[in-house]
Length: 188
Ligand SMILES: NC(=O)c1ccc[n+]([C@@H]2O[C@H](COP(=O)([O-])OP(=O)(O)OC[C@H]3O[C@@H](n4cnc5c(N)ncnc54)[C@H](OP(=O)(O)O)[C@@H]3O)[C@@H](O)[C@H]2O)c1
Image (cartoon, rainbow, N blue to C red):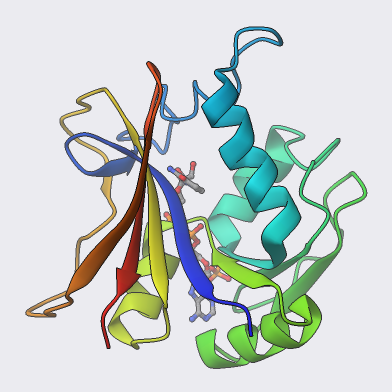
């Protein structure tokens, strides 16, 4: 059976976006011009494209992606499940298949697992999403793409978790000049 993996790019000081939600260089390793992507980074991206059967994201991340035409030529062909209180009237341009889920994180995960057919499910964009799944104990692993930048303020990934105590086992570290990919298993 596939794993449920929190997958996020984060600054060294713990932010997944700048103050206005800007990406501020967190994905430079991902969007590097052709020919300048490190082999190890390309392999990590290829792995996620091949192993993910579904992706869960929040409505705001979906809207930002739509505004930037981020789902046009989306290499991730897995169905995207968008958590929202109300489905939009029109859907983002591109070939990405979206399912809008209005009845909570458990329902989104159940639907994502069914769609994934044994492949992994990524809990992606963003912090709000991540915190809900972490708190609910629904994750098996965490993959952090740690960007070598300090942002100082913005949206923190591991915020609003209260006194949550979660133990992790480091299972892989892959480094390139632009990013360090950290993979952890959540000990249950
Ligand atoms: N660093 C990275 O890897 C990464 C990846 C993706 C995104 N991001 C960044 O993350 C930022 C957005 O994150 P965010 O935390 O502000 O927002 P978000 O998680 O993308 O979206 C939050 C919204 O999703 C909906 N939602 C979330 N949980 C729900 C639930 N249980 N039931 C119903 N609806 C639910 C609500 O929208 P409604 O009430 O409007 O329906 C909520 O306001 C952006 O700046 C983006 O660039 C970073």
